[in-house]
Image (tube, rainbow, N blue to C red; front, side):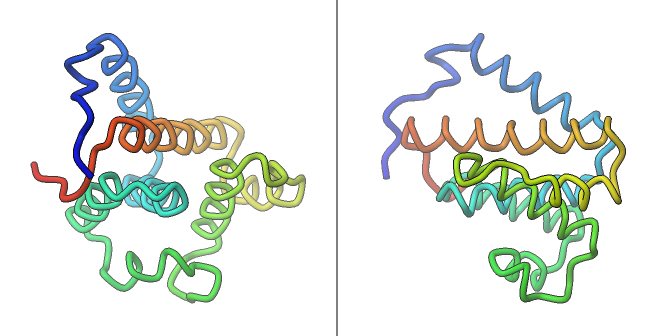
Length: 148
């Protein structure tokens, strides 16, 4: 896929707004590796090769293992994730695919076993932010590989 145009240049104010969301997530106090798992899982669901390439690289830099990255697409069957991570991955899927049933009370309670209300909102912001980045990348034709 070839990029249609550079959205950073086309609308710098929109790009800055997205960067502010990213800054909020980065300063929210959520574990950085957990945030990368959110980003990777949402990007898998959305089919965003650009973001998958970027966030698997970022996860590795934070010390995430190859095994956990490779198994993320089948996290329910893999015993390498904690209960808290499993709750967050389920929440990531539910919010990313919100029209398929939303966030059930049972899932909400599962997440709340591990995260307080403020952290829950922070998780939602992380999920919403990566979903927005995915949609920007896909709609403007950004593609892998991601090179820094």
